[in-house]
Amino acid sequence: MDNQTAIRHSDTVTEQSLYERDFYQWGLYNAELLRQGRFSEIDVENIIEELEGMSRSDKRELQKRLSVLIAHLLKWQYQPKRRSTSWELTINVQRKDINSLLNDSPSLKHGIEAVMNEAYDRAKLLFQKETSISKNILPIECPYTFYELNDYDFLPE
Image (cartoon, rainbow, N blue to C red):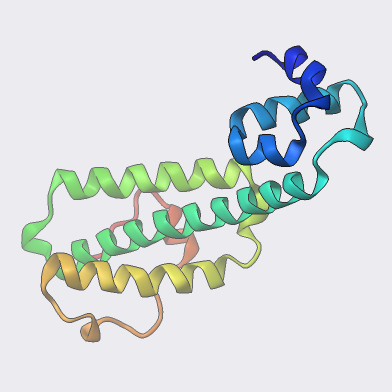
């Protein structure tokens, strides 16, 4: 069903049932309503919910990528004899993806310290699981600055 067909069928398909039944078509349908300026017909509540969800999703993605990056930097630092090209590649890929996220959504930098703290807690668990070294030997707070995390030349010794 194309956008125009969805608009024509709006009498028989409510936004709520379309939202529950076919999210993809619901999105196309509401986008077409917006394009046509038919603002009174859009599914405002679900659009608000989806936009908020997208924002939370970007923050979660940033936190996950920071966790992986920090965990690999910890492994690099605490297991110097096991350093590998694979670890270095993972570190650089995470940095690239973090930078892409921040370029797409610069406001994610606001409150980055809190996100880094959450990421560090997760990174310590990853570190412990992947190395069998107790997370208790690690500093209480993240030993790396946000600048170091983004610096492609930085690898801890």
